[in-house]
Image (cartoon, rainbow, N blue to C red; front, side, top):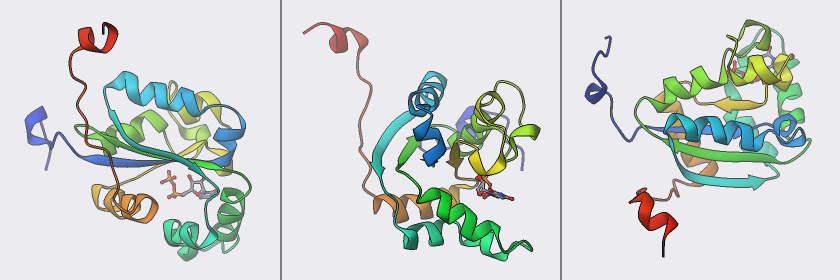
Length: 163
Ligand code: UDP
């Protein structure tokens, strides 16, 4: 049902984001992080890694069911072509809101101002993955981070600037 008030949405919902090798190669890592940070989401896990094929095959298992059987191996191959950056972001409504920041899967359909509209043209080079449901986000956080996330609070700005 429709949520009208912020407090109906859990504050600590977590979303998983995976920076594709194309995003890393194009030095857009900071750009995506900046947009998530500016929005107010909190970074609670981050790592760069050469993703294992077995992990990617689990992560992208839903693509194996597509009528075009080439897409699944193509996506897995691309995702092993270079390092990825995996992140977990926390915040109210972050799964849906994070997908809004990324924009539609196909960059030519993505709304102006989204990452995929602003920086990508091809669906297989669309910069960054974002979890589509809270359930999938939780599965992906287990798969990529073994549920190891950092609990922290922003604290006072004064204390972060002055010793
Ligand atoms: N993908 C692709 N070609 C397709 C469909 C998907 O290259 O026809 C890639 C694309 O990078 C996409 C990813 O596979 O982001 C996962 O597809 P999904 O449908 O889950 O889209 P997403 O959730 O990433 O928007």
